[in-house]
Length: 141
Image: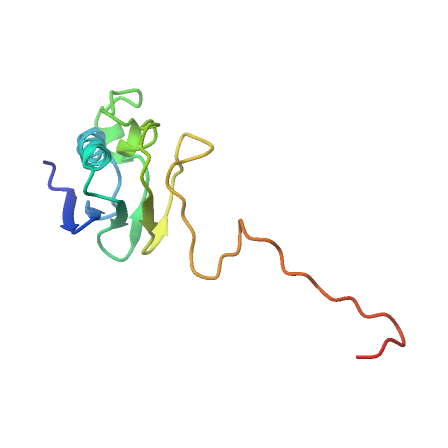
């Protein structure tokens, strides 16, 4: 197991922490390790939900590791089972994965409809808009 991916199990909950200081960027080795974790999560009937979070307070995840790319890691390398980040191509993952975003997130997933839904507190996207009352001139309140 890659030291950058820490896994903690609490009953039916699996907590996956991406911990690669400074920016929690994902290189090939980290992506392969995350893929193995999410495949094990998918195949374990006792696990019901996974929580993905980032170590540290500055970044949740900076996306692709540009330092590794500058050192010669190919952009089209084999990112292992599940594709980049271990989850973008894991289409048969039928359990929820919660992204606990703590800090900045950068980059983006390759799919337009990622299996991880991210929502910050106070964000009302995906909910019905609040109905506004219109007042007419001379109307009673």
